[in-house]
Amino acid sequence: MTKVAIIGAGPCGLSMLRSFQQAEKKGEKIPEIVCFDKQENWGGLWNYSWRTGSDQYGDPVPNSMYRYLWSNGPKECLEFADYSFDEHFGYPIPSFPPREVLYDYILGRVKKGNLKDKIRFNNSVTNVTYNGNNFEITSLDKKNNKFSKDVFDYVVVASGHFSVPFIPEYPGMKSFPGRILHSHDFRDAEEFRGKNVIVLGSSYSAEDVALQCHKYGAKSVTIGYRHNPMGFKWPNGMKEVFHLDRLEGSKAIFKDGHEQEADAVILCTGYLHHFPFLSEDLKLKTGNRLYPPKLYKGVVWQNNHKLLYLGMQDQFHTFNMFDCQAWFARDVVMGKIKIPNNSEIEKDINKWVSMEEKLENPDQMIDFQTEYTKELHDLSDYPKIDFELIRKTFKEWEHHKVENIMTYRNKSFSSPVTGSVAPIHHTAWEVAMDDSLKTFLNKSKK
Ligand SMILES: Cc1cc2nc3c(=O)[nH]c(=O)nc-3n(C[C@H](O)[C@H](O)[C@H](O)COP(=O)(O)OP(=O)(O)OC[C@H]3O[C@@H](n4cnc5c(N)ncnc54)[C@H](O)[C@@H]3O)c2cc1C
Ligand SMILES: NC(=O)c1ccc[n+]([C@@H]2O[C@H](COP(=O)([O-])OP(=O)(O)OC[C@H]3O[C@@H](n4cnc5c(N)ncnc54)[C@H](OP(=O)(O)O)[C@@H]3O)[C@@H](O)[C@H]2O)c1
View (cartoon, rainbow, N blue to C red):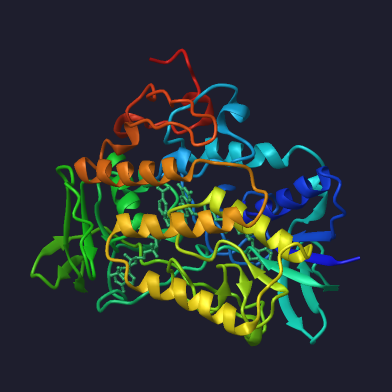
């Protein structure tokens, strides 16, 4: 029997498990599957942990999520085609749920059946090699400090790429009297109440961490961008300035001459695609981009078609794109999709990479990833979902952010799966301090 290893039980790994489960439901004979996850529970980044640094076994904590994190995109854009929000919650819910609500949704469909039995929790994959015929995986059972070796025909890498921080150094950091941390270790904006906070970066973490600190009472928030500013209309108390030059004592000095007293510096400087457990010939080497090279259809490792990567792209689309990738990967494993010859693979990858390199603005990036996801969707029996509505919703969302970065999360959209329209949330995001599932779903609250 074919044996498949899945590394990671985050959203991507769970999509992979779900895809096999759906094939089995249709009466197809599925391979033997083992899923490894180094955490003690499933859900990947969505499984919030208070821990930073290393866990009780000395293993680096993969989690980068923080308290009070609300979806930064409309939930309608990430909805599963085979399991709608309406089905999970029983009624339409607002468009921008907090983490706990999305975590509940992600787990809803995989809790049905016995998928959890296929996951070896607290098991860290430490080594993967290919011997020309199959893969040998070494994993560490962290609880019992016991290494095991297993042999597999296929390996699916679903270990995420927002867990290992990229941490640059600036002059003056060694003697800065305040706190310096990466967004990977940011857990609670309350810590920065009354403080002068410097945030470095100009992408989603910088935007959201800066807004969180402002929302929970930071005295000032100064964002230092390196190349392009985010350029939103920031509320009073927030500003965006050009690139940190150095820290001098507790003062941050920027390259545009701006100076700011600082209590804390939060590095929202992104993450590394880091796969220390893969041998060199299997290792994807890329930055955070929409089409990492060497992956056919964004999934199949060009040099070894039995190695599949999920979710390695920079992400507008998330959960339903992961599903399309997983359904595609499943059909590759089950022999229903034939991989073309090397020159066709090369041509296909080059086509996407050269399109990606020409992208100039968020609307074009949204179009690019929508086209990619649609193409994958057409290659498997993943259920129907309205990608044109998703494309439109993403673009409206981008424009709402430009209109007002404080209020874009108060908007509502309609579902690409059921068509139902989301209600407006009972509390505007900028004053919603409680992010619990209970409060979010409280229908009696006005
Ligand atoms: C701060 C933050 C906020 C985000 N917010 C949103 C949002 O609002 N909406 C959205 O759609 N997306 C969001 N994302 C994007 C996020 O990447 C996806 O939602 C999703 O979590 C990706 O799923 P994944 O399975 O690829 O990776 P992950 O969620 O990272 O899961 C990977 C899993 O692999 C396991 N693993 C890693 N290495 C090993 C190993 N060697 N052995 C065994 N197991 C291993 C980890 O324990 C983890 O459980 C956010 C990301 C970050 C960092
Ligand atoms: N739900 C939410 O609200 C939420 C919150 C946070 C994050 N997220 C998700 O988390 C994921 C990761 O986002 P991310 O922002 O952490 O990573 P990212 O999108 O890869 O962005 C990394 C940023 O770091 C900057 N940078 C890198 N090196 C730098 C340096 N030396 N000095 C200054 N800036 C530097 C980059 O700037 P340049 O452009 O200049 O290179 C870029 O702006 C995304 O999928 C995002 O959606 C979601």
